[in-house]
Image (cartoon, rainbow, N blue to C red):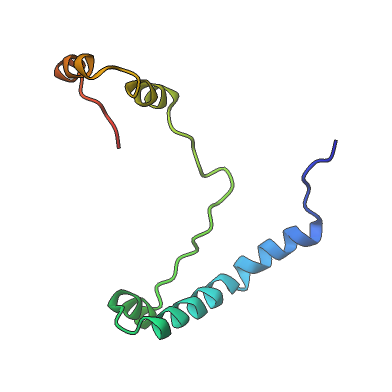
Length: 97
């Protein structure tokens, strides 16, 4: 069975993307294009003035899935009849964010 792999050269390209700040150049071009299309956008104009760009790609392993208990509780709520939901809401506060 085939597996997903990335070559050494591909991994080097990922590293260069960050170290050569290609992401910053690309973000600048995108913002300039946006300002050209939407000249009244003050938020983007302020960002361009200050040049406050952050590296926005997610680092591998950074994402954590939600707690299983919260997911189960929220998904089960859909199947509870309204009459019982009112009784439960009086006793329990649903923590949904």
